[in-house]
Length: 297
Image 1: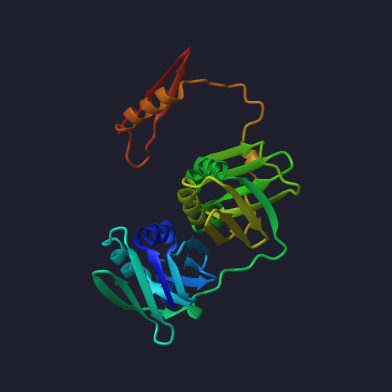
Image 2: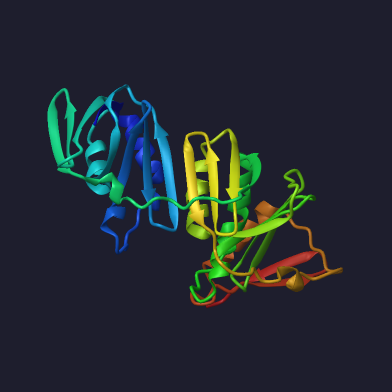
């Protein structure tokens, strides 16, 4: 297995999916990136079983194809010490010995059989929907902060996606706060809903901020695949039924307050320094056309 790649291009690609790498997995192979060279292209994959993310990397030259699992930490640390230079990879697929060669040095490390790397789940009878990367990134940003961290309530540790003929709805809640985000410009021929885990969405959000193309979403009852530009993210959906959030949203509420958003944010930040650290409570008092914010420790 032999190929040449730009060090900067490879480093940026590895960093873009490094957040998926498992930190406490019982499978040592998940501490590695899977390198797969086929048909002249390099595909790099990271996984924690629940979420798998891959990125396609352009190569300067390819001599031999194959698959190899390469330790992530030492590879990242090594690449960070290089400038923008071409690096030659020479990999013995029998001994799994990896040699990185540059004009001024050689570096050797041991890899693992690529066949040991777990295969991502497949999608059966997939439903599909497309949307601009900017739309999905904004929708995730508006809802992910409201999700919970309670492992006893796994459905609240993700964002609920609802696809309807009238629009796209994303909902996040931790049972204390709730956000419902609606887009009328994204419609679906079929009505479906599924819950995407917080970690997967966080990875998506970070990558989508640099994307310009549409995102293709394929899903079934268990998994979802997000594909855009040279990235693909496959995640296991949260199993369970999302709470009936509409029941807690007031209907025909006569109380409406309109304020300047920037002014309100600035005042909240200023007052929050004096709030109790355990409750972070800020009181809002409405008196005529005046809104008074107060906090005490």
